Amino acid sequence: MRVSFEKSGDSLDGMSLTLDTELIRYKWRGADGNFPEYEKLIPDQFNTLTSFDTNEALKAVSSLKVLSDSKSYPIDLTIGNGKVIMSNPDDKGQAEIAADTQGEGKVRIDGSYLADALRACGGMVELKLSDSKSPMLFTSPDYELVVMPMLTSESQKPEDKAEQAETEDTEPEAEPYRVKGISGEVPEPVSPSEQAEEAEAEVITKSEKPKRKRSKAKEPVAVA
Image 1 (cartoon, rainbow, N blue to C red):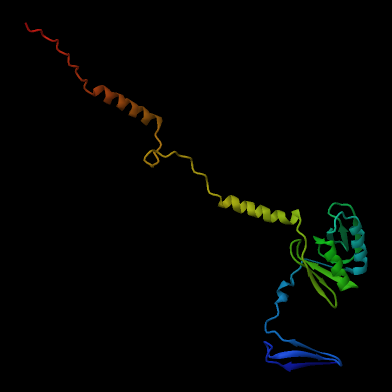
Image 2: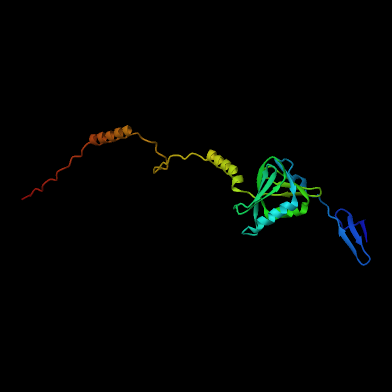
């Protein structure tokens, strides 16, 4: 088998990968582009660190999976005081493994994702996390794995309170309801004393109007 790079006009970058065997020849055309900047997704600031044996952790995950009622089984990790406690959110089971810890923290993770990360790393693994909402990092001599945690009601409370406070600050004050007049203009409020004066002036105006005299109809006069 022979592997080589050849110049090719069909390729976007001008090169092709060629694999020759005794019976067949494989050829891959190169593609021009930039590899995704995955380094930005790897967290670099942490508040809690722990190191433990993946074999012991996998046994604990398997025991908690048996007690789960669904295929997706969330697991709460509580780190601190030289141990890692794994438990079901509904308190059906709990497992504890010895670990080297720095700081304290609690995070919820999907059990299947946790098992896959532990199998990939193997041996001793180091888990680093900053809080219960940020990505967590599993590191071993051969691997670096980033796993997103599952959000819980406790991790969502601070955001909900902040959003509620912001809504209260930005909510406009309700204006008093006023009925428009016939002309479409809003009449100004009138005090009770002004209403009484207007009523009195209206009565005086009506009394000052001259009365009309009724003319009496003349009786017919007979002519002889």
